[in-house]
Length: 410
Image (cartoon, rainbow, N blue to C red; front, side, top):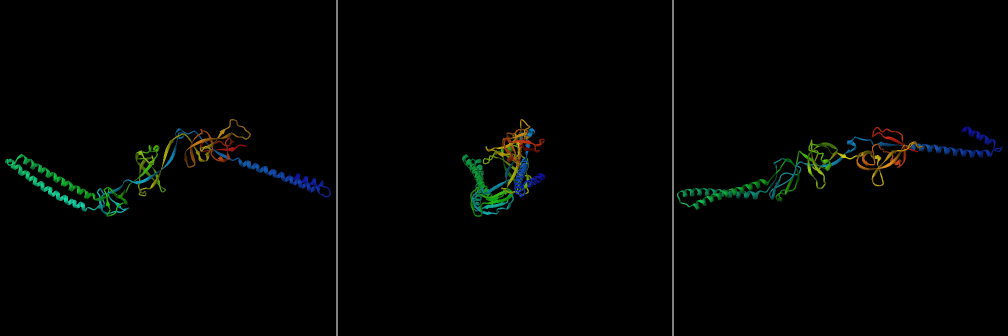
C-alpha cells in the first residue's frame, strides 16, 4: 500500500510541469480519497466486531423425564405462625358476693397451689354461724326432751294409762325434733362452707398475671379477682391447613423458630374441628425442652413441608416472563424441520404459556405448555423474540442443571 502511494505521488510531480501547481492539487485530492477509504475500512472493521459481540450465548435448560414420585408431586414449604399459651390460665374469684377484705398478692408474684391469695369480709357469716350454732343447741335440747317424753309414754301405756293417740303423738314429736336437729346442723354446715369459700386459694402453681380488684371492693359472685397463669409448661397453638393437618399426629416433631432461635416442638393434640374465624385446623404442640425463654403471647414460626400431588416442572425464575394476558410464559427452542440454512440455525424460539404453582427462592414450579425434553431459555430473555432462529452451539443434555448454550443465528 505504501509503495503504491509513493509511486503515485512521484508520477504526479513529474506531470505537474515547471511550476508544480497541478501536482499538489491532485495530491490533496488523492489524500482525501485515501482517508475516506481508510474510514470506510475502519467502519467495516468495527461493524464486524460489533456483529461478533452481538452473538452472545444463551443458557437453555432441558426439562427431563423424572421418576413418578417426582413428576407427579412436589414438596412445598409452608410457613405458619403459632401463639404461645400457658398450659392453664384461670381467672379466679369468690363464689359469694361481699366486700373484699384483703388481696394478698400482686401482679407478677409467684403462687403455689393452695396458697391464700384473697379473703372476703366474714363478719355477717360469723354472726350467722353463731346464730345457727345456738339454734342447733336448742334443737338438740328439744330432741332430748322428746326422747324422754316418748320413754315415759311407753311406760304409761304398759299400765294402760295413756291412749294409743298419745303414744303416736309422742313418737311423732321425737321424729320432728330429730329432723329439726338435722336441719339446723345443715344450716351450720352451709355457713361453714361459705366461710371456707370466703378464702380464695390458688388452684395451681403459677404467676399472677392480672389483678382486677383491690381491697374494699364489693364484688358479685363469680366476679374475677385475679388471673393466674400456670408455670413450668407452655403450649403452642397453630392454625394448619386442612390438607396438611392429616399428616400431623400426636408425637410428630418439627422445628419452630423465635427471635432467630430454633427449637424442637412436638404435637400433643390435633383438634377435630375448624376455627370458625380462620377456618384452619388447630394443632396444639409443646416444647420438648422448655427453657423458659417463651412467654405467653409470643409468636413462633413453624415451617412444614407439604407434599403436593401435581405434575409439573421446576424452572429458574429467570426463565419466566409476563405476557399480555396476565399469565406467565417462557421461550422454548424447537428444532427446525430442515437444517442446513445459510445462518446455521438449528432451532426456532416459541413462546409457551405457563401456570405458576409454587415458588422457592430462585426457582418456580409450573404447569402448562411444556413437555419432557423441551429446551427452555433461562437467561437473556430481553435479547430474543418469538420465532427467532438460533443455533445450538453445545449440547450437554445429560443433566437438568447442565445448561445448553445457544448462539443467535445470522
